Length: 276
Image (cartoon, rainbow, N blue to C red; front, side):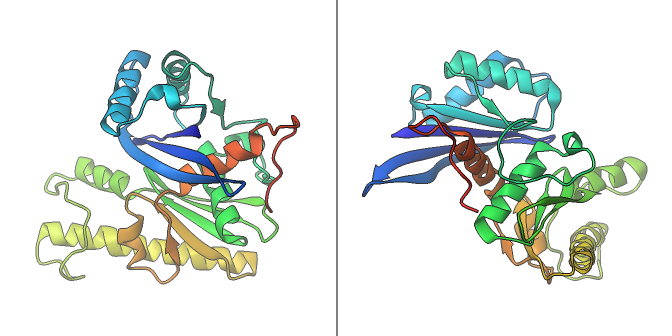
């Protein structure tokens, strides 16, 4: 059995997954065995990160020595060398980094491909591999990103919009009498309390944003693209939209696994071809 550790370093959270590979009936089977989400702390040292990972592995009854491969994507440049050092010190192997030169199987039609966040490419690869194209991957993170993939599997670009927590923090910081609230479904659209009014504005406002942008993207594509959502608040917002067809909470982790497999050397020294 081989074990793949996948890590996505975001602005707010770091998502971590452990995939187990086992041979069964002559074929290799893969399963997401563990997944964790921890806070992103830009001041962390490699020793602190190593301690956190060791504690997570121990709690899951796993050994760090079982990890055979690692792949990392990051949108926080200062943290990437920290996690690279952890890979070398804790797991005794260098990680595969999602960035220029890595094989994704997806042509990028952005004017400057280097501007595209690694997580956006990862989500797009996963959405296309899992659902085909055209497809729109919507990620509810620090920013809400809409990433568009053509019928032929080309990354076309997308939309970036402030995330719900980001908007709430801006509202809290810019107003004297409004406060932070739990992002949840209110009892009614018409808020009877300040908390309810803010919750209504956030939830239904963002549901409307998602539907409006998705409809406009479909019109520009000229095709009825599927809309797949991921991220911490995806389920909450998806229930209030008419365009999100499916929520995939582990879309980014699966995308990292897919990209790793496209770059993994085969027995003959070649690389695995894309299934699409």
